[in-house]
Figure 1 (cartoon, rainbow, N blue to C red):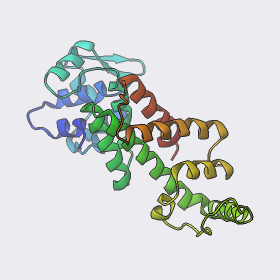
Figure 2: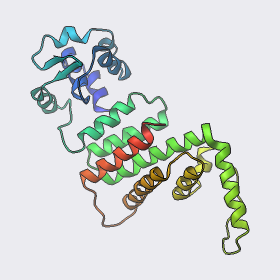
Figure 3: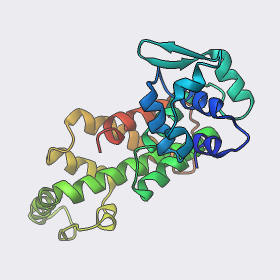
Figure 4: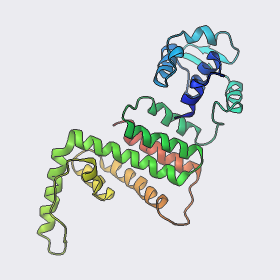
Length: 248
């Protein structure tokens, strides 16, 4: 469960503060309908059925702008001091982006990857965060292939297999059509990405960028002396959000 959901479920937090918290976790002003939608998506039924403005007008911590409600910096600090909001840091926008994405996820397997990645970022377990966010992205690509591109993918696999069979220097098993996530996971991820470019799922530029993410994931997932700065972790996550999570 994310911090937002935990905070909205608490009985010792006022209704006004819960509305403030929803706004504080969002980038930019929020309209009333958007606030209520987030409340509903995170299990706060009472908040989703009320008018946020009736409560926000009663506090000095909220500001109404032409494009919606926002909160003061003092409000964010107060919420963070009370443990309702994570203190701002380099990766705060990253966790907020993941939490916003999570509100629209209804697939439990996909949600699990995101929730665990969020916790890793918050706990500064950066190696684990890099690995988990990558695993979640690959899972989305697997699902996209299975649901939309399976015939083209298997055709490309057979083409490669036939080409390799003609090359005596390359000894590879005959291609077996993929029909499940486990089948796709049996492929090397680098080969999987290469095949996605060849069937038009990825552009050449996207393939190159995702290969960089895969290289970083491999470094993070094996014993070595490598360390990862917050900026590097943030760039890795944003790359996968923009290239994969926001599309599939």
